Length: 179
Image (spheres, rainbow, N blue to C red):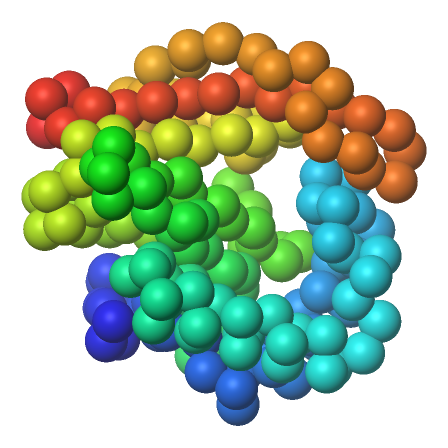
C-alpha cells in the first residue's frame, strides 16, 4: 500500500517501524478511553510493543495481502485502521480501527473506512466486508451504520476486556450493496 490522501488534512500511511513511537504516544494519551473497548491496550506498556505490532502487521500483509495504516491528521497520528486476515477463498475481510483522544466525532474514521471498503470491494474484488464492535460502543458502531452496513447480529460475550466480557455487534456489507 502507498500513502493515500483522503483530503487536505487526512492521509492514510502504511505502518512502518518508524511509526512505533507515534503509536505508543497516542496509546499513552488515550489509554483510559481505549481500554474500555480494546483488549490489547493494557499489554502495551512500552514502545517495543507497538514496534512488534507493526512488524506483525507488515508480515500479515506480506503473507496474506492485508494491510494496516496509520490515520494522519494534519501530520499527526490520529489512529490506526486495517484489514484483519483476508479470507481469499470466501472473498471476505474484516476491518478494525481505533482513534486517539481528541480525534473522535470529526468524521475521520468514517472517511478512512470508506476508503478501505472501496478498495476491498472494488479493487480487491472481495464479496464481503465485516466490522465488529462492542454493542455498547456507540461511537464505533456509528461508523458502519453511516456507511450502510447491515447489522447482522450480536455475538454474546465475544471479547474479554479489563472490566469483563462484552457482546459484539456484527455488521456486514456485500459488494452488491456498496454504492
